[in-house]
Image (cartoon, rainbow, N blue to C red; front, side, top):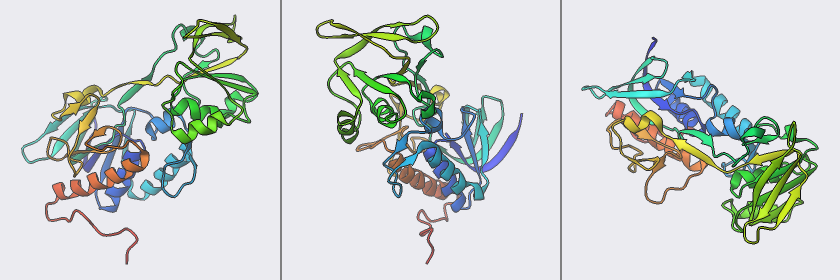
Length: 325
């Protein structure tokens, strides 16, 4: 068992957590960054490192991996303590207002405050019905490397941002791309859907997978119209099942904070219902919440600045602009 003493513990090493670590360093706070994944970046690294991200200020477009690399560079001068591959299991609040976080490895982090930036928590893809036999043989749930589908005939199943973005990003790489969705309305961003419909991607709505065929790998997929049951066979060798994810907040649910569904309730300081514990990013909930990476960055700064005052009541919430004067 290892024991670590820091000013601030950050639970989650996604974009919001990395920015929180940077901002804590800017405020002169030592940090521990705890994440159950074995590398920083959260969902961005695990699910779509090569996907273009368009809603981060200052970047007209940035690949997920580049964004995480840049955040790592921004944070590095402040030397955060990374505990990767560690799940934050237990939280104890002491009488003096400090905390102990115990990880899944049994390590203890003594900390003066906590910021939870855990995204959607532990996530697993929603399976494609009857598709499990083809996982690793042509069926994937996310595309970590676009080049892995060079000159392939690709079927994408889904109507959310990931499905549409992968279809657009694979143009010019895959030989053919077909996207099917069980409805005619997409959950993806309107601008992305407009680009999809103007692209070379064949889009089939009200369409679902019936069976996947192939002896050693995927050779064809039978799909059906869910209104008429009309059948059609698509000659494809790769299937991307972008059906969303199941999320689980895990041990966070045992902490003495109020959770609504899968989100942590916070106030305008980004403080949870437990004094000294703050949260930022997609995991938070409040009236008017917008789940964007750019919003998470602002919430991280708000959480860290208010955590700094919790740690030292003589400190100022607003420390001044980082650009100096």
